[in-house]
Length: 343
Image (cartoon, rainbow, N blue to C red; front, side):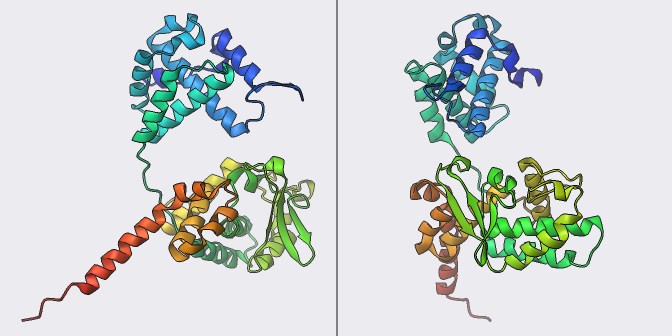
């Protein structure tokens, strides 16, 4: 039963599918590029995974269809069964993401020929999405946690001391400058983290940003002393630190990957708050904090998070204001409700 749910490895795909996807991703030259040549690695991975899941489903339940042309396999009957198959392992949001990426893949592989039934079904699943509420913590609490960890680590010469300090700095910096996970992991000293005049800045080029716009962020004054201590005293304690310019290093002296950073921060926040707050959730926390504490400044959250439009900020984070409004309403009702006199 478990085997049926696995996607089909790319090496086992039918030739027409594999050739079409490679052509969509191709970057032969400036003037010969596939429709998906500009996609970010995460987008490529999501689409490839969706196609693998679709082909894995067909291989398990109707193997003869793999001999058909790719577009001929996409029928309403098969898609209906495929969505039911997805329901065994993912929720409504996951089903929509799989279908959206499948549709995106077919549009890139066969421009102008993607079946209409895919568009119809993707739109239907989007309407049926029921995202589960995500736990969030106010930014000031995340910042306080990071600083407490660093204060506790000062004076501890053991390995756990430098790890605690490193993780505390990551939490504080993410709380006040909520960078996307990939960008946060790739910070290089002298390239992205630079001293400009009297302040430290995080500087990213347009090619390194999801929005394709360059950005510069100043380092908060409250973080600078901790950052400089990390650079001068803590980071050099990691093996091979002098051979790398990566800001975040692991115990073996290698730069931490985005996945490793997510795991470390999720574990630290779960121990402190009872809920796992991975790096990307810090962005949710930042916008939710603004939405609750200063709703008139929601545009600030959009700029801080490098959203392409204010609509993205509202779509993802307006829930925080609804939750706070319900609390305030309950408080008002409680104050207006007359108390029963004591006997």
